[in-house]
Every structure is written in C-alpha cells, then in structure tokens.
Image 1 (cartoon, rainbow, N blue to C red):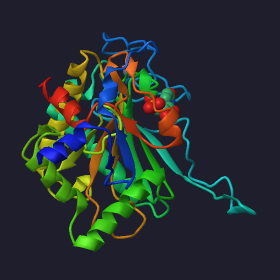
Image 2 (cartoon, rainbow, N blue to C red):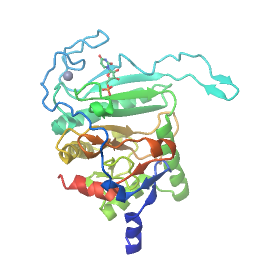
Image 3 (cartoon, rainbow, N blue to C red):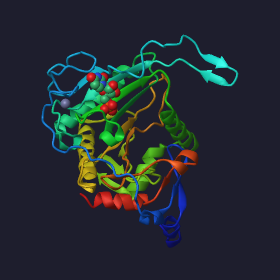
Image 4 (tube, helix red, strand yellow):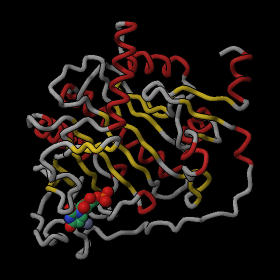
Length: 343
Ligand code: H2U
Ligand code: ZN
C-alpha cells in the first residue's frame, strides 16, 4: 500500500463490499466517543453437562411434546415452530395494484452440535466438529435435492444477545422454495465478476488477503479467516476455503479437518477477545439449489458479532445504518490486529 493509500484509509472513507456491491462508511476517529448507553447482561459461563430443563439435551421432551433420542453425536430435527412450511399457505400470487405477495414454502430444521449442554464449538474435539460439518453437508445435499427447494441457509445464533433461545450448542437450517435476498445478491455479484474476468471473485479475494496479510486473523493449509475489507460489524469475519469449492461436499478429508480446525480457532479467538463467550450470528453461504449451475460460487461462512467495546457494550445498527447504510468505527485492519493478538 502506498503512503497516500494508507493515509486515505486512516481518514473517513467508504469501502465497497464485493459480495453485495454496497458501500460501508468507515469513521476511524469515532472509537474515542464516550458511552453512557446500554450495558448488556452477560450470559452464564458455567453450565451443566446435561440440563433437565433444556429442550435440546438428549432424552428431554421438547416444547412441542416430542422426546429427543439419547443421541451421542449430532442430532437434527424438524423445528417445532418452523417459519417455513412444506405446503404453501396461499395457492397463488397476490397482486392488487402496487401490492404484491407470493406463496413461500420450505422446511426449518434444528441441529444440535453435541449431546453436551455446556460445550461450544471452540471447546469440542476436532472429530466432533468434523461431524457438525458433515451434518451441514448432508442436510444441504438432502434438502437441496428436493425439487421445490431453491436455497438452504445454515446458521447459528450464539448467545442471548443474538437471540439464541438456549445455550445448548446448536444451529438452524432453513430451506426455502425461493432464493433469499442476501444469497441472491452474492450470487449476482460473484456471477458478474466471473462473466467479466473469467475468474472467481473469492479466489481472487483470498489471494489478495494472503498477499496483504493485515486483515488475516487465522490461516491453515486450506482455509483463511479474515476481517473482510468491507466488514460492517466491528469484529465481523469471513471464513473461506483457499481452493475454489462451491459446496462442503467437495472438500477432501484434509480440507474437512482444516475447516474443523479454523472453526474451533475462530471461536477460541472470539472468546479470548473480551474474556467472555462471544455472541454472534454465524452462517454458511452455499450455492442455490434451484437447478441452475453456479460455477462462480465459492462457499464461505460469515461471522456477524454485535460487540464493540467490551463483552457488555454492543454496536447498534440504528439511525444512519437504518436510514442510509452500514457504518463502522474501528478499521477492519485494527479489528484484525486485536483478534490476532489473542492467539
Ligand atoms: P435459536 O436458539 O437460534 O432460536 O434456535 C433454536 C430453535 O429451536 C428455534 O427456532 C426451536 C426454536 O423454534 N425449538 C424447537 O423446535 N423445539 C423446542 O422444543 C425448543 C426450540
Ligand atoms: Zn441442553
């Protein structure tokens, strides 16, 4: 980076998100502002291995009345309060002048990562984390193969601050008939780059981050975790395979192990930052299962953590973010440096 370029990034500037094609406003000087606002309550740190009141623990009865098996590995079930249902509630589209609606259908599943109530991905054994990845791959393949499913979104809400309903290690899987907004924008931008250059956007982006190094947080032979150049959330990260892979099922055994390794490390790193379990929404972007070919798609995982200054002070996406666009204070480079310093 030239001196002129680095001084530009030290002042107020905006950066383009390559995946969404949106601009993010960066105001590095604002990290100094005082805070007399909301202080969050922290989650309990010590949890039992089995909680008789947990809906997700092995052998317990769930809120809908169904009993969980005494599972020993991962466990997947249909969400008892699913947002999507297999049969459309409306049989046709709705159009009244400007007003438009259409039927949506699909399935929602819940995935327990482990029978142990108190574990996090960062505390699980590598083989158990591999098993979570294999379950993600199997669910994506199985749900995506159903003719009426256009996209499968796999995600985890961690911590009460991010709306997780239970501390038991778990995530969710939503399978839609249509392709949701975020995925559709990412598909469009990866496809546009591919059409223009004949190359994969995220392969080129990984190469850029490996060359520049300043936003790299974790790396091994097959994966990298970076604070993306366009990060919106203060400590947002992006986990990417170095090789061009559209889906999880394309990973070799070595790559699977490497992915388990970085999933564990990113968790440990986040928890170390404020010496507390770090809340986030983490999710995988996998190609649409709409029957189309998506050669430009490079799978990846986003981590969107809300914390800003400490374990109890979060970034609020309000005011300007709601009315104008995303804005951040500390630079992605500073965030990456702080995350790296915990390792
Ligand atoms: P969250 O913690 O991210 O909310 O995910 C838990 C999901 O588990 C949630 O969507 C479902 C909720 O509907 N759930 C059941 O299906 N059955 C239960 O007995 C408890 C929770
Ligand atoms: Zn539990």
